[in-house]
Length: 268
Image 1 (cartoon, rainbow, N blue to C red):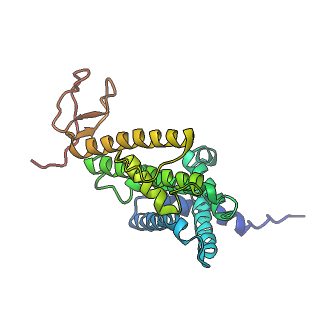
Image 2: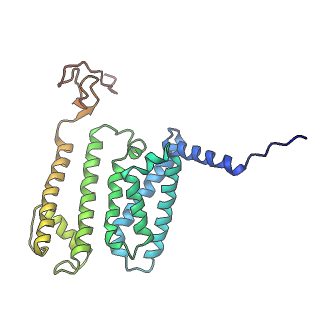
Image 3: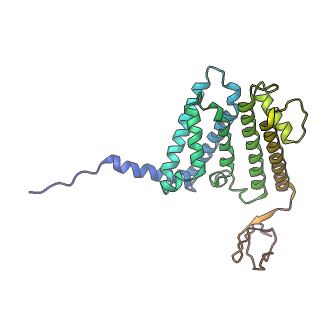
């Protein structure tokens, strides 16, 4: 008596195909993959725009509808990235993954977690500092001055809106902080050390927040100025000492004297 082999389950074959397709789209170098990642980045920027505008539209009737639509889109992106990862355990350990999951939780429970929603803007920082961004939209400017300037600007903008959200949620009932614009105005005035004094945060905790904002603002402005005006150095690891940054026309490493072979796109 002969037995016939069981026919393969189509669902089992479909899973690896989906993973392979997503892996090619998220990490491949084909034109289709690049176009797909460009679309993902555009959607990311639109989501970040929604996060920034959320305090202004919270009271509108359509807010919850838009909020849950954004949650659905973000959930799809998180699931797709998980399937596209080479190792799921490595993907789940990334800080950016936990940040995305936290943002998703604030979108799924907007009424309960709205006081923590200002942390959603951190997605701007993780996006601009990710290789996913620079390998797609920034390939031409990767490892250039424009990358340093863009990263420094994104860090400054992220800090402004995170601090604004924190001030708004923590001091919204104090005199002077009557809305999100007041919190943004206070943050910018403190960040630039202008200190008009028309809006101040009460108590010891308010002074601590002001000090942190001023010190961090000075640091971020200095970093942005350095990225804009200091002599640019290329990134090229020295094979001997590992020094990462060198002059554009460097022939030897300044740290150890090792001869360098820095790639140069200039035909002359």
